[in-house]
Image (tube, rainbow, N blue to C red; front, side):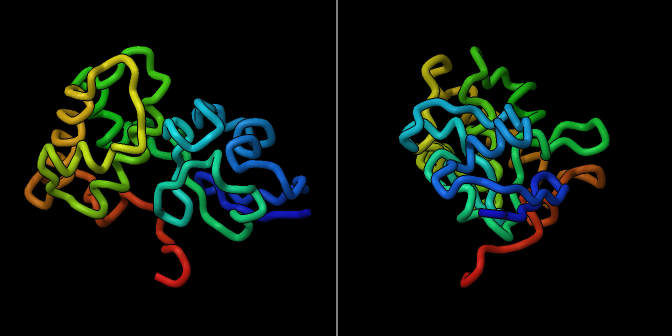
Length: 176
């Protein structure tokens, strides 16, 4: 079956088996290996990408379901050699150890901040519940999301990337 998707700003058209998971299409066909396969059961969140601007676990989406959609992976966040503010906040706050969960955590954090640009600690923890980390104890991850929110807020200065401006891909999921 032929699908056409836009991944990180580039359009791709490929033949895929109807049973191919989006995570496998991204990694094996497109070489987007930053999207990590953690559990293949949608429990860990390591494979989180943005599909039409909203986070999804790509191990629970068939590639054919993404036909016609816009997908953003962890590789598509940096612009002009500059890390996305959430990526930078994870770096600055040491919000990673082994790094396995980091791509999914970052993608989910961006979605969380797009929905709530000023979350408190409880909201951040609840927003990341579907993403597991075995190393950090989450404290630095929560701190990083809070730091990113501060840097992306309307009063953060002229160079800040606004949550509403660029945190999500431009399109919205149909029907919303």
